Every structure is written in C-alpha cells, then in structure tokens.
Length: 268
Image (cartoon, rainbow, N blue to C red; front, side):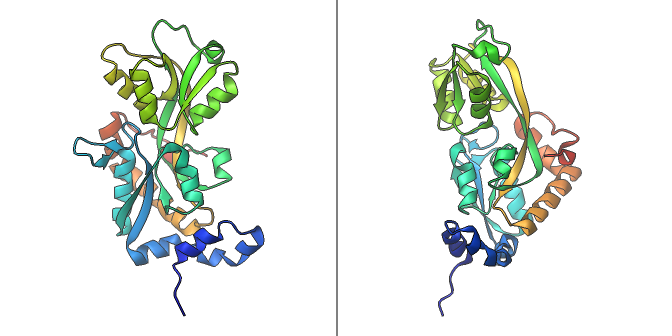
C-alpha cells in the first residue's frame, strides 16, 4: 500500500466539511512530524524593516528570521524558511503551507477564529505618521486626506474602521509602501515604528513625524487549529527564551529597545 504524506492529506482535507474532520484530530501532531523529519517549515513575511529583510549579502535576517532560526535549532530541525507577503500570512497557515508562522502578526479576535496563536513573543506600535506641516492628531484629522497602508494589516483595519472619509491607498507589502513614501507619492501613512524608521532613513532629512499612536500590538507565533502539542511546545520555548534573556538580546539587536517586562504574562 502506498504511503501518503500526512501533510498532503491534511492539505487535501482542508476543503472537506466539518463531519470529515471528526476522524482527523489524532493526526494533529505536527510536533512529532517535525521531530521525526528533523525539518520545520516556518513562514516569515519578508520586506518588513527590522523584522524580516535582506541584508547586504541578500540573506534573510531580522528579528523574525532570527527567531525562526532559534526555534528550529531548539527543535533539532533543519529550517525551511517560507518567504511570504503580509497578505498571505493567515492563508499560509490555514492551508498548512508552513508548520509555524513568525511574521509580526498581531493577535486579534478575528484571526484567532481562523488560526491558533502562542503567547506573545514580541510587540510593535502601530502609528500614523506624516510630514510636519500636516496637522493630524487623531482619526478625525484623517478625513479628506490620502493615507497609505499595507493591505491586510491591523493598520488597514483600524484606519478603515476609524477614519471614514479618508482616501485609503493600499499596498501589497511594506516594501512598496516605503517606496511610495520615499518617492513622494504619499505624505501620510499608517504603519509601524520600524517601517517609519526605514522610510525616514531613505527620505534624507525630509522626515515624517509620528502624529499619534494607534495601538501597541502583541505579536504571536501562528499555527493551524488543532496543533495543541506544538502550541504547548512553542509557548514553553517563548517563556524559557524570554526568561533567560536570549529572546530579548536578539530582539534588541535589531530594534534597539527591550521587550516589555510583562510580555509573556499578557492576556490575549
């Protein structure tokens, strides 16, 4: 009898009805599969300054990439880095094209209905920033103005919900948003502090100011529903790496700030 790869079966089962899934929970043990194969597929969203980008040698790096390497090492597994866009983050996990996603993905109630999250492993602030001459201090100030966002992000959702009447220009990833700002196509953006730093570095003195902070986001590693053993392992890995200082040291290397002291105790 031909042996069928478990991941292939799971991917094919994704389109089946709820009744068909009743027999599948016993298969939901990606941790065992990873440890047996000694290989783990971890998805990262490339083109996000400080989190996931290409270095001078065109090698992937950033805090998310390095976190993925640390996780793979602790698993005793070879890392297969699955490079995706922001918009592909949730679908990549839903369709099991990766075992784990470490891609600056904020933990939200909407996303928790589709995929599972670990406890937070990092944070980021999302902000509205613009040229100094723009008088914007809240969402009301965005009405009638053009503002750029990266599609399928919390920024996109929050501006859409709270700034009705603004002209929202959506980009597929942070890299194209940065290009638009640097080339002068936009004077106002909703983004994160790391992306703003990259924009200002390239604008050569003509910097954007932070107008207001929209929200501090807790970032979680994501995995498919039902992978409770893998989720437990990842949660323990985050706690251990945070308490040892290893996770903070790596994060600070890229972001020049410490992780919040209460990070692993936050309710999400």
